[in-house]
Image 1 (tube, rainbow, N blue to C red):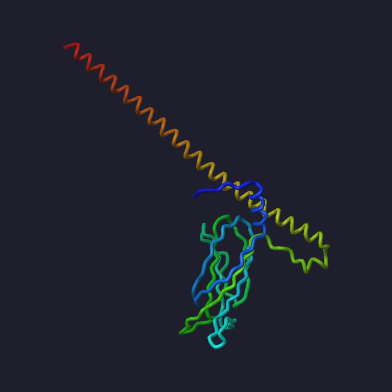
Image 2 (image 1 turned 180 degrees about the vertical axis):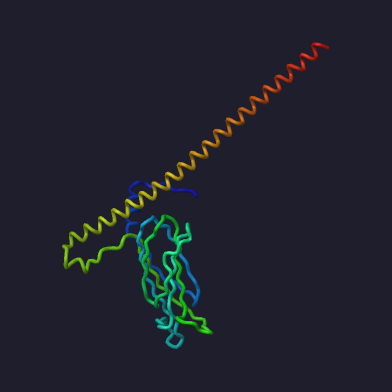
Length: 221
C-alpha cells in the first residue's frame, strides 16, 4: 500500500483527534439485516457506542420507535476471533468495551423483533449510530460538585495525553515489525547472492579443469 508523506505537525494533530474521536451516522436497513463496521484500535482503548432504531410506520408515514423491536450488538476482535460484546438491547441503547489487543475490530448491529415469531413482516429501519473512540470523558456534571472546572480540564488533558502515548507505542510496534521483516528479506537476498557467486565460481573452476584435461589429452596424442 502506498503511503503519503505527513509532516510532524499533521501527525500530532491526528493523534490529538484520535484521543477522543467520534463517528456519528445514520443509515437504512431491513429487519433482521446485519450491518458491520471495522475499526482499527490500539490495545486498551475504551470505545463507547450509542444506537437508536426507528421503524417505518405506514399509517403515520414516519419513522418511530417500536417497543416490540430489539437490537443485537456484536463486537469481535478479528485477529483472534474473540467476542467482546454480544448483547441484545431495546431500540435505544448504548454499549461499551475495551480493546484487549491492537488491530481490526468488527462492530455489528442487527434489529429484530423480541421473542420468537412464526412470521415477521418485512420492515424498513432507520438506524442512528454513534461511536466514540478513546478514554471516556469525565462526568463534568458530577465533578463540578467536588472539584473546580480547572481541575476537570486538567484531568481530561491527562486522559488525552495517555491516549496519545498509547497510540505512539502502537505505531512504534508496527514500525519495529516492519523493520524486522525488512532485515529478514535483506538477509535472504544477501545469502541468495552469495550462493549464486559460489555456484558461478564452482562452474568456472570445473570448466577450466575440463579444458585443461582436454588440451593435455590433445598434446599427448
